[in-house]
Image (spheres, rainbow, N blue to C red):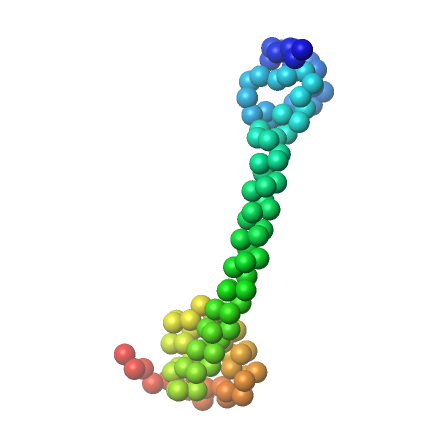
Length: 116
């Protein structure tokens, strides 16, 4: 049978004080101190989240490739790199990198024309 200990009794049992979820401590229940909910529930939630992540990973990769192709098309059409950066999910450095990898030359030096 489990016995409920008072705070003073619990404090004397523990050599080092630890944060606990509640004011009650059961004698033979160290797992209850570490995990405030049942482990099986947390593991099944983790498994489900991992499954969802892996299912959406393919869709994310496809969307990323489509965004890269749209960036390249915009750069080839003459849209400025600053405007492409503003409209895309990528940083300017990454846009320059993929542009160079795909044969798009850097913008000419000097002041840029504003289309605003």
